Length: 331
Image 1: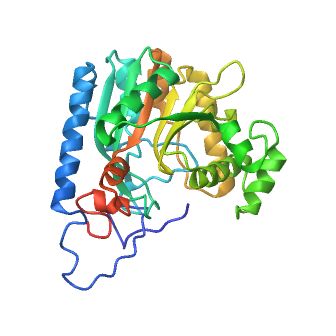
Image 2: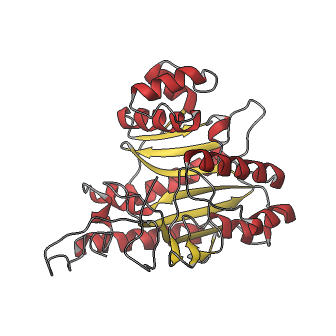
């Protein structure tokens, strides 16, 4: 993703919003007061959910010295073009894992995160993320807990589970785990730049499959090794990663967490090479996270949930901006 600065010497580098409202017409909140009352109730219910389970709430920094290496995520940065400062965090993941390595119990956090270039019906450069880590859990057990939370916030419903490969095969008739050429051809047919790699092709194919599904609540499991991110890979070669899709909207991304520091460093280095090949912004490996993992990240599973999306689905509104007090255009 490419982006430009907001004016000279701006505080946030990397976002380029298009805002041209009439003078004084955009002071009102994006959400109604009733919607904000519903949101407040969902926040309270979420904290009660974790309190009953003995999961400790934590607060980690919004600004950090490092950021993610994932080529699909572009970070915002404090400072000026001449003197770049710390990164606005795209997720509390790295700091929360450092807490776990230091001996914290199961933990959760609700707070603001930031990503450049993410604007649209279901995206806002600043959004609220709910993230939690459960000691001793694997991915299936964490999926059960995610479903329990969603039921508590949105009401009970049936869930289906499909593997990534099964979903892609049923939609496009290609082997997502083995036939890279077919995946690339399918992605190009869908409009992906022919120069993109297999990882980007798989991401686009998944997004298209999700958009066409009619399943109300769907867990997608067993991602291809190439899309493992920070999840561990099993003996069969599939990543222990899952996503939850509600009414065609992705709301959660979870892992049985990778604990091997050497493997983590290798994956981050591969991310950086892919960034360089795509002309992306240069980032460095988070050495503090690597040191924490070498000290010992305990066996755990973690998940990140887009809280604003949950609120929007509860409200039945047309976009995520109507689920937050002030979206980017009004902030």
